[in-house]
Image (cartoon, rainbow, N blue to C red; front, top):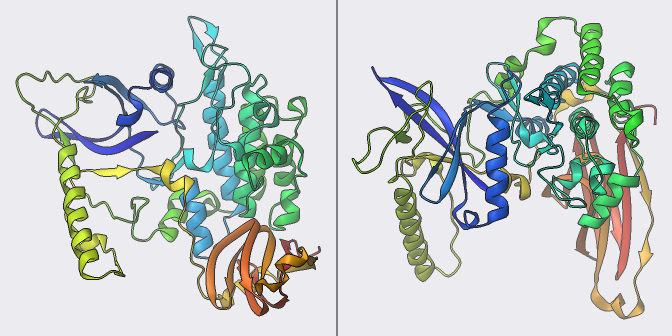
Length: 486
């Protein structure tokens, strides 16, 4: 719904400051509802000033487009960190998860208690997800994106759903009244998934996902990951109580519970060292979601002197209030040029193979980050070869349950069958040597009738299985990577 640009603000005596510009996408700039929501985000974010919340410096309008100038957090989102942990088969340390969760809860409690003229705003974030929790290489934890936050009853309509379905509280999924406890539940989902590596709520459709949020059984964290201490399991599971009155009543209560777990179990400073953990996971430093590395010396959108007829204002600290207007055409020209090259290649070879090498490509004038697009269509992670060191983490318990079901007689001659995999919480998968990436929840594969080799990877070990699929058969295979005792 919005575009993010990494920009450089200039001031007197060679002063420079990196900021992030968030602006409405052009095709949405004429949508009154979205523009209203964007303006509401600016008004709310301007009141937020907390070390665990991304700071907004300025809000302005250029032409028909509104934009926000925001703090640049050099690091990665919690979602990206989780993906890297899986790709490298590195478990996320439970105490570090508790430490991060306590920081997010601290920021939420500040937002929940925000007042205006002495009256509480009743602010609720409503979109606490791994994509909106940022970890910096300096060890900071910051919550961002108050785009659909709700203050009292002024900024939403009764019965309307706003937020990501998989991270909704039950009352939010029903369109009922939300409060601070709604954000507590969402943060509980985030921590559950970080501690287990899997997805808590999944479904084949939006309706199935909503039903899972409202009714499905939530397994205890320690059952899925035996490395989670019992007291941490208790704190997280209390946040996930379906009845709001049974949860932590405030984000501060949640923060204190998590903080007590950290105090009890942290043996050294390394157990809560976010910067050190990121440095091990990302030795090459910060990179954009599409894999194009952003170097400090790379060309960027520069906000500086413009034409005389374009007034340039600055807020406190030299933050720009007007964007330089000739940055985007360069990107458009680049797209047109790449399109011409692609057409030429297609004309020469009807079945070309493209190999993208960003490091050898042209310099871009701006780095465009589109996390929402990446979140909606994440690239499948490629599992590494089995790691012998994973055996030190303990033998996994893949409990297998097959339930073959035959389709109607008219489909028997297809010489194909359907393999339905149910994997909890998650594992990497390959079928007949072909990698399928990360699999969590229910996945369906149409395969030829006959024998097939399945291989699953998980930080706790691996599993190889041979299955036989018959013509027209629907074979269900279930694998649970739970604690050693199950």
